[in-house]
Image (tube, rainbow, N blue to C red):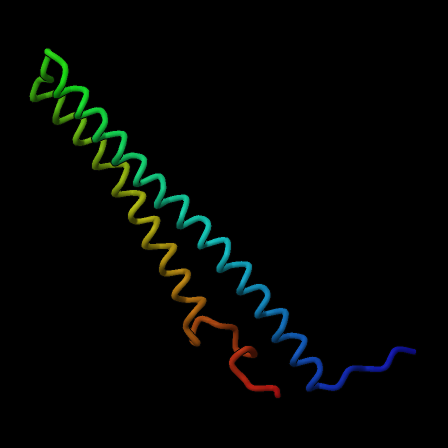
Length: 109
């Protein structure tokens, strides 16, 4: 027959499991945030490289083509920035006491 753990021991075990899960969520969101930020930077570098090549070429782009390039650029980073903001919101929620599960806020020690 297995001994039943005390309530205090059970609370500690639950708190440890909750803490572990929060760390995993944090790492996942953090990785996603860095990936998204890298995508934003890569788009910007790509756009700057494209603009540099166009400036160096003998055929300048028409105004209509420039507007299309700017519209394409504006859609990508804006959506990615919104994604970064959502990720930051998730990280903030994990960090703040109100974002933690109820039983992790109680002291069991």
